[in-house]
Length: 114
Image 1 (cartoon, one colour):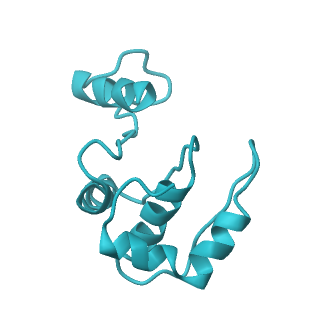
Image 2 (image 1 turned 90 degrees about the vertical axis):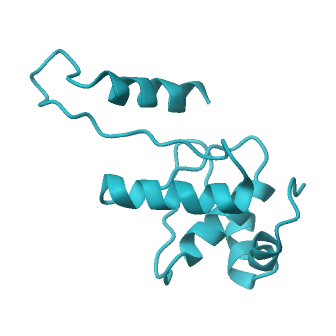
């Protein structure tokens, strides 16, 4: 089911941990947390899971917008352009009705459409 022949993704696909994760992917409504990864190894594992998980939406949560951009860039280098999308946090307070930045709203819509 691999769509790309990236040697880094292929190496992750051959790892015992990624094979275990593929065999134990959560059912709809469940979650699976991947932790203990060093450097960009979590992104590599996520790319491998993406390549082998047809019709699944995988979500990577990050602490900061800068970290989200870094994960997106790593995924695009492994999987190609438009392989991932950022769903940015709202930049308004919960009681405010208007989104102060149209770009944030646009990025959120683009991620949902993908």
